Length: 429
Image (cartoon, rainbow, N blue to C red; front, side, top):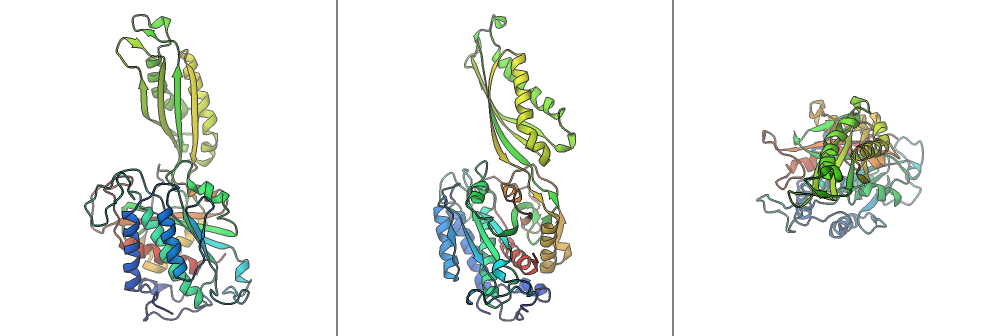
């Protein structure tokens, strides 16, 4: 082996990983741990918004090339993929799958996905690696996700050179997760799933202790769409509302009644929820305005109901606008479907984490109303996303994502690297 693997760790049997997986917690050397933490902190100090992640992409490309790999930047200019095949460094065609069943080049790839973009919010933490870019921060943990996939790739490359990687792996560093409808759909169009048989990801969870993993088969996130509504009509004097289209009243009725009407037109178990975040109309107290604007999000826990949601929303909004004699313009922006974890991929993550840290390190997690564009990959191939614990052990302060004070216990990086490494070694198809 070389410097990425512990000198004390036993050699890996190329015929299978089960015998060495219990040793994985000790396989990463301290220099690699320090390097990955430094890499994460560098990303944290230099956050880049969706589709602008040029520095991040360049840093990843440089490090992967230094490891002897051949990363490829995506066609949109940011993000990249990097394939690691068994027998790395051998002549093409020399390597065979660990079970001898087929040439490794023909085996489907296991993709490991990390998202690389940041958020347009200020970093409010008092730490040495605080964001140096005003109004931008890695407040969702994408710097951790990215570093985990990078670290797993570096270890897997060395295992591949040693003849110990049973199936090929693709590292996928995806841009623009925070930009609806998500950079994943663009990445799919770029061919990142070509040859992929399944895909795995992690997402930081500040409610789960570092060193632990939250898992759930089936839906684990919510669908999330955005809508903008503009009502218009004849305005006038507030003394004569009967001669006008009373847009303030119409807007008030619409924002209160539309969520209730939608809830009565779908199965209550679908978790369809319309929530408004903005309503604007008028400029003075005695003038009925000619325009009212509203915007909000629609979230849904159920995939079939989400597919029907645009038609349902259009029908309800049109009915309410007509009732109040208002003209209506609805812009419905399709966001992301729910992430629905495929059972066998979820089982692979459980098996890998159990091999790494024991069964007690895995906990059940609830379905979240947050959206994640990882779901677009699952429209094409099976896969699963796990919740990676980033809360310092013993810390019970309430923390959340998308806040300026978000931070992660960096021991989670080692946990994620070893999780993905174990999953790649245990991956069978």
